[in-house]
Image (cartoon, rainbow, N blue to C red; front, side, top):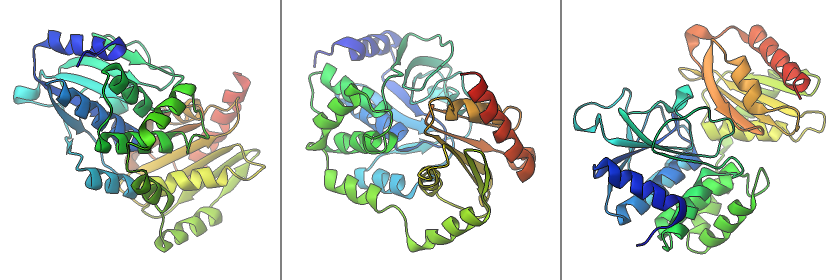
Length: 329
């Protein structure tokens, strides 16, 4: 294997670390794209002679992502605190996130690399950085690494990467770049595309219908902002699907879904307006009460129960953030 381009730089940085074990770290509470990118990278680094381990904080809260992990035999190691012992100084590569944000703080003392596609990643200092903000999915970047190495992704890696691209670009309809299209084309027939289609197209059940009813009943609207709090435990994908669903209302260009059934408040934001960045809105809203981030069209975050300001106050925060976002354009 003779890598070229960005993957060659990553291999050079890893060789310079002198450590065979590499910690690949997706962001906290990882989604499809984060897990896909981490898995695709781990399979490639394994081919290059390293011993990758995928480690993360938080929880996997998506039913379809759990199915992907089980079907492909993806080994995710969940940890709560920075690593100790032999792994404390292992080289760490963060994928689909930035160490400057609270949801991707390095798990080891040796941040070796960052592979990301989110806007405004902040000032990062590490031997390897590959930030491609024009890409719709981090999985597309990792797919490019396989091409750099003159290798075809194996069926498992291709399946995961394909699912990551499809979910993060909403089936090539949202923030898709030529690179995403090319990666999708390379991966499609190497992947188990029938499994991917089945899982992502049938990710809801009849048990989820009460959540939609509650979302409508609890909803509030201010201008083009749709806001609702769902008082029951929901999967991450259900929250995301509801956020996308209510964005289909022609009067609405910004949706906010808050789920308070679990131990924490999970927030999902969607925007279809060029002057309303979902990432800006959620970061402004969560100052002092939570953490979150994302893209201009899609963002998410978490509020701890002891910092929840109340439904009225949270709604007011989103109104103010939306107005400020539009004023700053």
